[in-house]
Image (tube, rainbow, N blue to C red; front, side, top):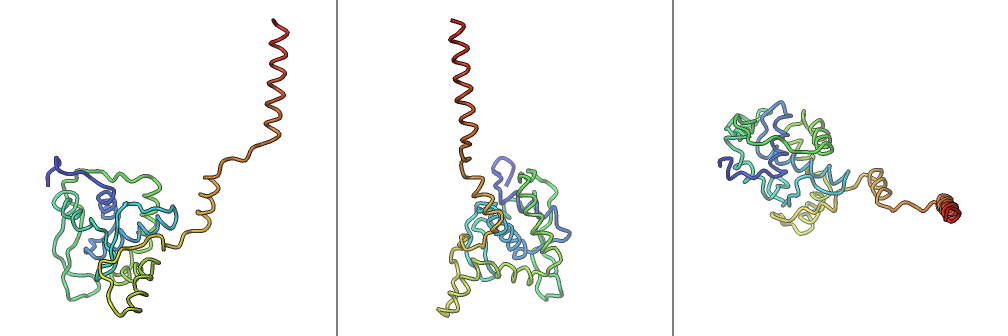
Length: 208
């Protein structure tokens, strides 16, 4: 895909940013879980995902609907996808994702998003792909799906990920609620303004 047909999304920018910050070349499953965990962290702190993506439960956990197509969009430009040996002595090769040499975008994440993404990356940087997968399964949305799978005895493949089940940070939530409230009226200040208005009216009347 050339520059003319490329319309960068937040998901594109986030994956490009993640790869620019990592000191290794993650596989597809690892990268997909890191993106999910970043979205979960923003929901936990702010109440909305970073990417705006919908997710479904797949064999290896949650996956953004446009993850695969976004990787394809950037392969050969922002991202270079190659076959490499897996980390931690896994016998299976993986698709290694690294920065490409022909970027058509700069990560367009705002300051808050960058802080949140780096917060997650600091947590997962030294974890194995399996540990990152377990971390993704330990989130509220995935716990609910796994619970239902155990109840029914069936895998809930393609089940939607419900981000409303992410446990919110109570301190940030309280702050946001307070910021959303209209300021309480200051009766003393209102009385001062009324008195000042009367005095101004009296001065104007005396000048007529």
